[in-house]
Each structure stands twice: as structure tokens, then as C-alpha cells.
Length: 206
Image (cartoon, rainbow, N blue to C red):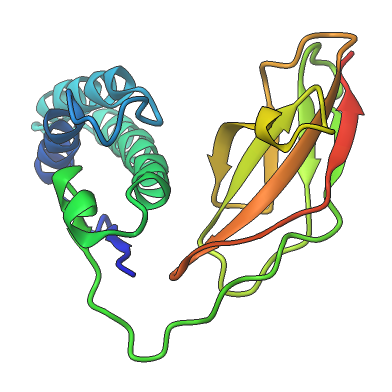
């Protein structure tokens, strides 16, 4: 099993822009990645904004430099989210990862085994926001990310559809219909691929 190599720390602004644009180029029209996360247009927009901020900060104006750093962080966070998507969608296949524009980490001699499911999944409303549900669960040792799926008919396992990937032990469903009762599962993802699936948790959006 192969793993995406992030290698984003210490990038120069121009390098971050180039990397973001290369990801867009490699994943555009790539049949393995039909629905990229985040949308490739978001990465393109963030790269363009960072490039403009970099040019504006060439004279070392402190305020412009601060803005440039902020814009680079935004782009790099988008790329991190894309790395999680590619890791899951690629099936941890090295060639598939490379075809998305990412490098592959060197193999570990002692990869951690299949991961257990996330425990204690709880669903709650987000105070002050209609149509949003917050999910949180216990951390899983060795887990790189979690796949969140949702359904309105929990008796049919095939009805659960992926709605997001999280690198934290929490997730916010921002597309819940007020008044609807939703059912969720959380699947842990590690170096060896998909781990266990959590028990079903539910919540009703306000």
C-alpha cells in the first residue's frame, strides 16, 4: 500500500502556486478522480490569489507579506484536503497517486495493521446554523483520515453515500435538510487502506 507524500512544509510561495496548478492539471479529466475534493476551481483560485499576493509583497511591505503568508496557508490547506481525497480514491495505489500529481512516500518497514472503527460517534446541531450537523468521535491510533457517509434509510447499507473526508476526529455536515433525520457512519483510513466502519449514529437537522 502506498501513501501520498505531502511535502508542503517550507515551500516558497512560487513553489506552492506551481504545485497547486500541477494538481489541477493532473486531475482535470483524470477518470480516477471524477469528483475532486476540494473542487479544482478552488485550488486554481487560491493559487491565483497567492500569486497576486506574492507579487504585491515583493517590496517587503510588512502588511503585504502577512497577507501573502495567509494566502499561502489557504492554498496549502486546500492541497492537504486534496491529498486526503487522493489517498482514499486512489486505493493506495502508487501509480494512481502519481497520476493525480502527488508524490509517493517511501514504504514503511512496519506498517500499522488494519484500523479499528471509530468509536462513540455523536451527532449534534451546530448552534446558530440551520441545516448543519456536527459529528465527533474518539481518535483512532494510526489513522490518517476518516470517510464520512450519510443515509436517510439506514436499513439499506448501499444507501450510505460518502459526503466528506476528515483528517480530524470531527466533521460538519453543511448540507443537511432542516427537519430530516440523517444516519451516519465513519470509516477509519490508515496506511493499509480502509479500516473498520463505525456503528450508525443519527441526528435531525434544525
